[in-house]
Amino acid sequence: MAVFDLDNTLADTAHRQRFLERRPRDWDAFFAAAPDDPPLAEGIALVRESAQECTIVYLTGRPERCRRDTLDWLTAHGLPDGPVHMRGNADRRPARRAKLEILRRLARTHEVRVLVDDDELVCDDAERAGFTVVRARWAARSAELREAQEREGRT
Image (cartoon, rainbow, N blue to C red):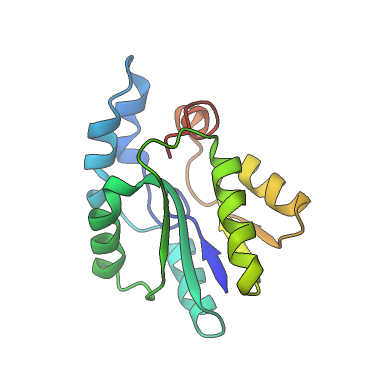
């Protein structure tokens, strides 16, 4: 299986970063704007190419309450079918911990060939755990999003 992150791997979140730049952060608006994310061509090409050889699994730090919008976005952009693993609505662990737990669970029953993610800390921890990683470096980096992933456990 090939495991793909969504935000800044397949979906460009740049247009909604402004909701994280204000204090307090407006998480409801941030996630409400997700359906308008443009696709990232590099990530989209890689997930489609991977689907020719692997089962596709999506692993996101988005909360479960965003499931319908997330599934609709994947369908609207013609992405391969696959299960979507999301963080619980109350889960505030750093993305690297939450995602690594799910990766390990997936690896108990399936061969995880690759994780594709933009979060350097997620990638570092996954590599240390023995997973093959492709670092999605094709989206603009956001200090606000990085802080949200690590310190606030939000995405």
